[in-house]
Image 1 (cartoon, rainbow, N blue to C red):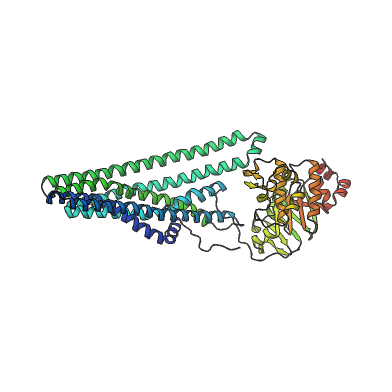
Image 2: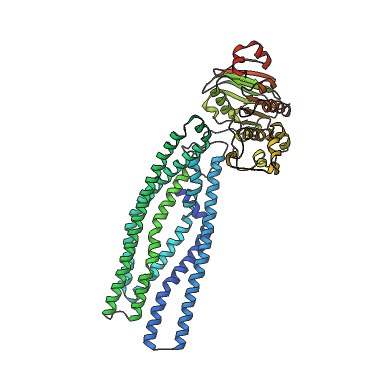
Length: 566
């Protein structure tokens, strides 16, 4: 298994990676957005100069034309620099968010799970919302710098008119940022908690949707709804808290910016009244005081977005930096080898021992359903080899010494509740599009009636989780997918529990025929599969207590008759 040796371990490392990877786009975006802010600042300065020139030299058509031309150049510069600057930054932002989404998704889809205490719904939230908010740092930094450019240009222009105006802008900006930086820390911690609670609510929804049918079956849907309501209420309360903090932050920023703009305007008016600045400089000062509120507002909001991006990056680091649950080996199993379970102890399994020869069709009849689930989990490597006693061997090689990818290519364990995905019948049977046995798999699983029922055939659309298919159709579709994989060793766990007896009999015969010469294990209490198997192993109290053909066991074992006879 290939591992990522460059996994970021902290949110700060993720942000540094995002910034470093987009340095070119950020430089161009900063230049263009700085040009935009400079052009915006230049507009009131130009108006002041025009007024000053008009009052000094009188009316002149040539001077008017030059003034209009200068204003046109400024407006054009502002428009184009904004358009192309934001285009560059938003493209980089979107691309970076996509990279992190793919990276988080890749961690979730790795054969070896990460050792992180997050549910699938939480990982989904991290891969979407948190990835987007982390990538926002690419826009935040250039906008922060360009806003600083606008403030500095305004301060210099006002300082040239009177040093006190320039100092007022600089001192006021520093004071505003100092106050808001303290408030932004509260936003960061509150936002991180809100994201965690929303993610937990999303995970709860995913769990409820997955288990909706069994919940309805035993009447647990109301209790499940109350449980979700509690989690959702906590998320709502935290969201309200964050909204209050954001509202206080925005209101404080706006008030402070307005105070600074008012102070600059009043000071300029007093200086003009005293005759220390001209009317043109007063017009420029008043215009800059009005204009400066926008970059100051933007400038003061940036710390908040930085804290949000950092909180999201920290949540992504939970997934990306989490170590794997197990460290698999690097060997590959030999083709056509036996499958051996040697003295395995896990869960309800106690000293489980059996061997399936290459090419053999074996059925395992579990008397306790939990033991069947534990055995399937061990064979599917959902349980790390270090987590149980004993050994599982494939082709005389220990499972712990094999790479998980090689195990999954060689041995497929198809669960009884195999997921059905949105798409078509064909993409569900052959997701990779490389199987050469799709027609045979469809026929063996008795899915032919579903294909024939729709004129689109295998291209018939399937809704998420197979919502437009019956329980039996979903189960047969899952079985067809397992058969189409055509692996060297196939383990089926209760493949026909939702299928009628006649169809089950046909499916069992078809599977035995299709898999002839390939190692096949069926964990089931279905008489049809038990009869089709070369031999039957009885799994009772976590160990194999007997083995024989199905018919011999029926004739000689009363407990077996009671367990499997229907």
